[in-house]
Amino acid sequence: MTVNLPGETELENRPSIEAKALRINLNRFIYGTFAEIGAGQEVVRHFFRAGSSSGTIAKTMSAYDKNFSDNIYGEENDKRYVTEARLNRMLDHEMKLLEDRIPRKENPNKMFFTYANTVATIDFAKKFKGHGWMGIRFQTNPNDSYSEITLHVRFHQSEARLQQEVLGLIGVNLIYGAFYKNDEPKELLRYLYDHIDKDAIEIDTINFKGPLFRSVDNRLMSLQLVKNGMTDAVMFNPEGSNILPARELYKKNILALRGSFRPVTLVNIDMFEKALDAFIKEPEVDENKTVVIFEITLSNLSAQGEIDEKDFMDRAKLLCSMGYMVMISNFKEYYKLVDYLSEYTKKQLALSMGVSNFVEIFDEQYYQDLGGGILEAFGKMFYNNLKVYLYPMKDDNGNIINSTNLKLHPRMKDFYKFFKYNGKIVDIIDFEEEYLKIFSREILKQIRDGKSGWEKHLPKGVASLVKKNKMFGIKS
Image (cartoon, rainbow, N blue to C red; front, side, top):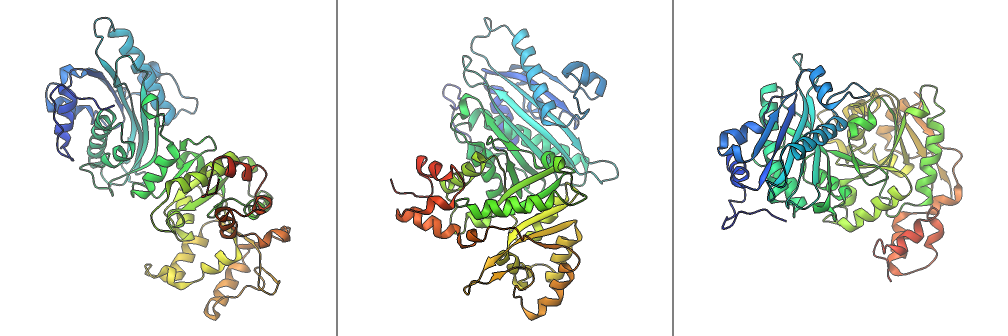
């Protein structure tokens, strides 16, 4: 539902920040509070400056001191303040106060909202770039339950002042979008960057919930973040909720498996399970501090042209149903993925991949955009604490191809040997040989052609889900 005053006309497609704040202020039905911690009251100041704010703002506050903050919102078990949990406590507390102190009987037409953020801007030494959580809990009808939008941002500017300014802009865009673009969640996402340089700030997690967003799948919203260039990678858990990569990956051992998973097959699972078995046996790897990621790249999703959102959701739902954590990334090259993961952990990293994909990473054409070419790429990739668990393939003559007999360009052989003999490449030897004849693209064709027999090549329960939910273009 879009909120409009009687006789109100639409502003321009990209109204100014001042116009957005004023439009909120002039709507006599919108009323709420602002709670901002860590970067000044950067959002609410736009509403004060726009004029007519007394009809919109019930209260604004900023509990900078930790003791004050804990006294108001309660203590966090992990003693951290810039977290999603802290944001939720702020929204809960402020909304309860609003409802307790503004009598509904006297204000039957008011649509309540609470906006909150908890932010840490760049430090004095400029080693920590800064990040934050923000969210709005709101209603577009006084009799409705609350809906909510929460998101996490990472700052990229090198000055705290600039970070504060961009926080204010994105906060106004969020509040405006919540009230005036809630019926178009994908557009709402794009409008968050109105009057903001995309290089200035990154949105790497967003979640919609509540009655206004019943039809929204947050995994699809994650895809939009990457597709729109708002971030390079997003993650969601088996329940389908978007999760913060930094929180899940921080100081963890990480095993990543890249694939099309179209659909997920027995060979994918064998590759994952055998690699994980070997990985957790490494002396420096603690199984309890290990994360496994099934990664799908944007280039894979768009291999057939424009991204097919149903096709994406089919893959996501299957992986989630099997209990796996999924990452969607814009990292076509493996070294970029490794570089990204290394931002969050110095622990052991591992990739599980098939021989054919492994051979491709030695193709110099993929690194033409790097000044140092393939040497720079491999320096970034293997300088980090990385191992590759190599799953074999069978050639046309029935020979098993692994790290000992794979074929590379002659110029790459000595280069390859350096990594091989330094223990960076580990063969998976206890593989299921019968699975080597399974290829996702062939199974996908069988599914679409209405043929039988493909079911036996998928993990237990997957085939029935494909049929039940009519996935991958299966014929009825």
